[in-house]
Image (cartoon, rainbow, N blue to C red; front, top):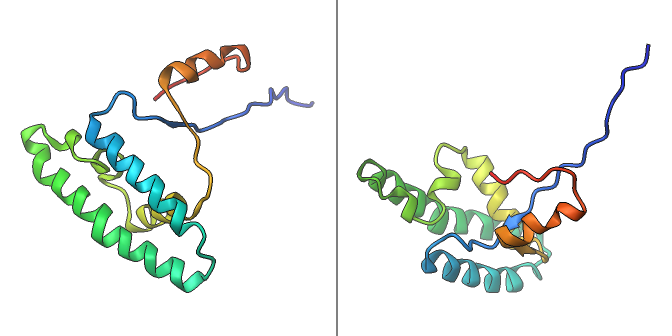
Length: 126
């Protein structure tokens, strides 16, 4: 007997940080500018070295600061902490690579995502 399978489409959208403090949006703007430059680099070794540098000099210090401030209830104010605390180095490394060496990143506000109900049957925002 064949099982009935309903095809599903799962899409991850980057949100525009519309619910975050101004410093989050300013850091996103800086990262977007940097990505515009770095995504032009094609050498595998250069990309690997830049990924390591960004991970150790930008991501991990923010995550560490968030860990220090979390007991005071302030960790959520530190960029990158909420998304990366408890994540492995390999996961963080892959995300750094994806962020800075992918040419296109389109972000959507919560309102824009919710307006997609004309296209999608169900929308879940987490």
